[in-house]
Image 1 (tube, one colour):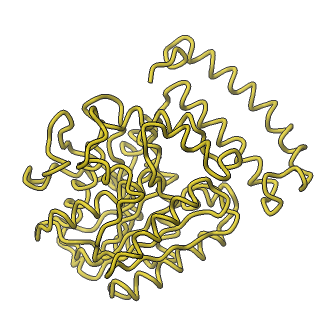
Image 2: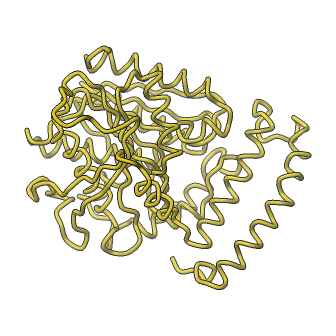
Length: 377
């Protein structure tokens, strides 16, 4: 996607205009939504209403200026004071089938540990580790310290995780980083944790929004690969997963219930698919890995799915969970958070929905503990 606003000096001009717009928009929104009858949902607080407006504006700004946020993630990695970890490329044999190197090739990728990395030589057999992939429509990076800290906080408190590793996969910026680059990275990160001596049954893989899509694809890949070198994890958590990914993502989103009220925009999703979908898509072997809705599969990994009752992805996420639950032997839990917009896990702090995310993560904890028989701390 090419846009004149993404180049200087027009980008700087657009940024100034954007800030001026926000200065006007914030007080107007505060006045408008002070009346409950004017709110998108009467149950939404004034805070949620205003932040939903601002989030849409920011997504529009990111799209128009092609601002990915990757610089902030790299800065966080540089300042991590020992919490940064680089995952090296695994054996090439572990990237096969749809992940086989072609234009996109496996590469080293990094992430942040919370509260800190495991000590070298330590016994990790009884540690519960969350491997979390942040969303961003495949083109935006949210693996920053602040975002990671918020995710890790609830995982520690309510999932009883020992550590959380927030893994920033490559964004789709050119042909070399289209699908399957991000999925290759998910394998690289998972292999990295296994190489540290962590029991796979004590690894919970988590992803929000587009990264929820990646987690689904990773599980499908691990099941198909069936390699003892990449054993299955103990469980997975999907937060507002983007499961219906097509070349017409913007138009598809506009047709979803709640699309005009939720925080996402059609333009950011269209930017995402334009950058992410591989050349020659769709093909029979890639569609299930990119758009998992209507492509359920058998997995021994218990999967927890959360979606907000006010978000546009709710219906597709629920339908995906139902399709997966209909496969004999699958263990699926769908948890709806009433009146939550898109991506509760990443936005709960700003929205003031601490209680809602606590309930959701505690439900995930109980479900995964019963299903995975993971080590109880």
